[in-house]
Image (cartoon, rainbow, N blue to C red; front, side):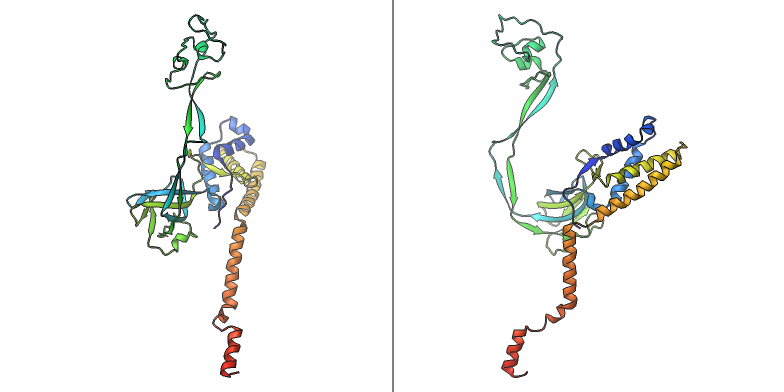
Length: 335
């Protein structure tokens, strides 16, 4: 199976906002249950198949013959054991600098007068913390105006910030990759995973969110299909102009079903309209998802050519070439 690395996603909350925008009346009456919509959305993700899941990769550190899989792991595409690698260390140059807000400063209605005998600034700065907080301190104005003693900046919005310097210290380049044999795990390994067929002295198996290996320590690279969740655990849906309608009409269909079960009067025309649109949107969505891409078509073409060769031409491979037959016949006078 070929996976698409360029898919776009959006959160379930964004999808629900679009659906509630079409059912404003029911939304104002609080007749839409978000929990029921989550169940329907997960069902649609499963219906669209594994190809819509995000393809991810990570290098895991194996210790004592096991390592925990990522929290968003769903199924394994393939895995390799990483051997020797080169490390490149970088000097702190060209770094990324961030300003992080520490705490706000509450301004007074009017800054108190400043005794110019104690502090004689050449230019009066309206953003000067000495003027804003009412506690002038010419030696260290930052610490007198902020509750955080390590902060060193104050802007005109009343925010105290710090500068954080992010350094990328090293890059590892792996030069040796070893194949690894994955023991059969029907639920955790993709059926086309090459690790199920590779012959290798290194083996591994997946159980209860962990991957166990027959070697004690090492680094393991895995390419896997992640769950439809973001880094914060929010449910994701596929963001496609033609597939979005399938999500929306499926949620609208469940909303009308819940209203009927709660004895809320619903127009039969609405039911017929949503049912027809939902059926049509599902057909379009499945046809788009199941349409093979170029790499899949090329793979099918190669398999077809190989099958035709084995069927019609393989039988002649045991015969000698025409030149060798002529030489044999002239030397032995058999023809």
